[in-house]
Length: 261
Image 1: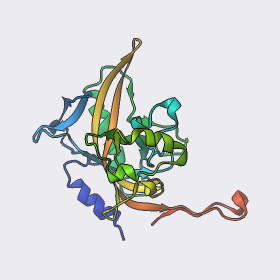
Image 2: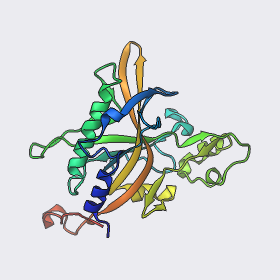
Image 3: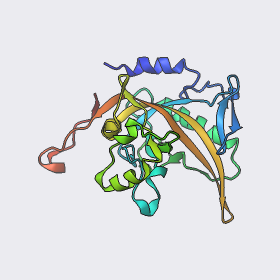
């Protein structure tokens, strides 16, 4: 059985874990990249891969083979991204760690920011009066789901890539020029097949490795700072066990507390 407390102790020893207050922020710096800036480690001059633990629910969970693609009206399938929101796990030892990580990410945003509008990565959402504090979300993405093909032959992953039937024509039109890139999701060190990722990630406690990227965006004299948490790897630590609907509906009384499996 997975031990959350033991895993937390292991993560705290990592130099990349955002859930500890003594994380050495002075060892990190923002450096220019092809698309903007990213957080780098000063010592090894490599892009810093942060680690955070939290819950994934159903809110804007776009992690299937088609990512967040809707239709040609809103852009090409080749521009689609995997997307999900990570929230604080209030029923695990990682609750305080998540709040610490969120604060560290806020602090990191302050350095390159030009405006007071910091978009696209961190969000505080509406909460009830009796809750201990405002729930927070970290928006995670993996971009893109497809990349330009350099070789003439189509790889097996792209050839057998399964998208919803309504998007098949769009997929057929782009796959000679692009290749599919699976979202790297693992459970018990086993790779999760793309078609199974949505079901596996929903209602899960996960550990996410990601890089932190920044762009200054200005359009029609309106400017904002855009931050992106780009996923490098997701490990499923635990799954929620969500009680099924009971006969009688709400009049039958309150549902049982959900547990982790």
